[in-house]
Amino acid sequence: WRDSSPFMKDPENFFVISSDFCHWGSRFRFTWYDKRYGDVWQSIEALDRKGMALIESLDPQGFSSYLRSFRNTICGRHPIGVFLNAIVAFKDKQHPKMKFVHYAQSSKVRYKQDSSVSYAAAVCHFCSNQDDDDAAEGKEQKSG
Image (cartoon, rainbow, N blue to C red; front, top):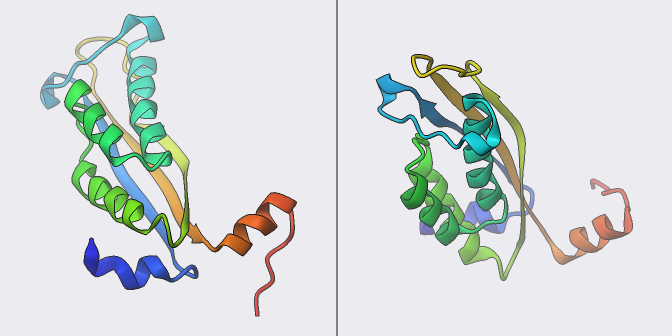
């Protein structure tokens, strides 16, 4: 992640983070289900959104703990972890903003024999102190 420093330092850059999330079903050897959330597909979404919330809050240790606890089958877990750690290293110099902009499942699992893959995409950009002040006041950004 240290090689990314020129990119992280430039507030003109933004990053798109996209990954498969939960691979659910016997063919993936992952069938975690918490009936408190309703149907299986709703349980899958709740599990994914727990991880997404940790990513949005830029919490690499929390995300790592989540992966150990739930064993969610997120394909991009390693690059996401590297990216989160890189962001933390630059937090003092830049003000990162991470937001998930899309979530989907390949199917709405209702039965044990069903399977599904979830997908999520987030955007991350770095703001200067002035950008944060302007955003808080609702000012439009001017390009020059």
